Amino acid sequence: MAGPQGFAQGRGEAPLRGAPAITSGASRSRRSGASAASETCRLHKIFLAYVVCDDVPYTDRPRRKTVTTMDVVRALKRQGKTLYGFGG
Image (tube, rainbow, N blue to C red):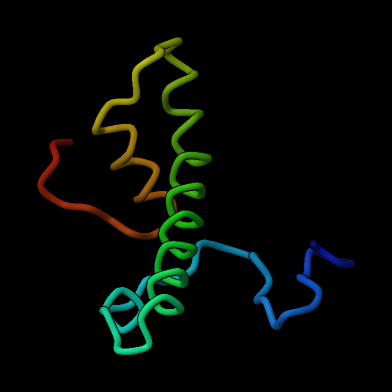
C-alpha cells in the first residue's frame, strides 16, 4: 500500500517512481530459487506496465485498436530505451 508522496509502506518495498532497470543480475536464475524468480517477475510486470502506459497515446491518436511494433518502439524511445532494427 502506498503511503504519502507515493512511497511504499512496510515490508521494505521500493517506491515505484519510474520504470526499474532490469539488469542481468536480476533476470539471472540464482540458487535462492523462488525469491529471485518472483523479484524478476515483479520487475518485468512493472516494466511492461510502464511501456503499455506510454504506448496508449500512440495507438489512441490514430484511432486504432491494434498496437503496432512502431508504437512500442516510440514508447520505448520516449523512456530513453531506444530499440534499433524495427523500422522508422
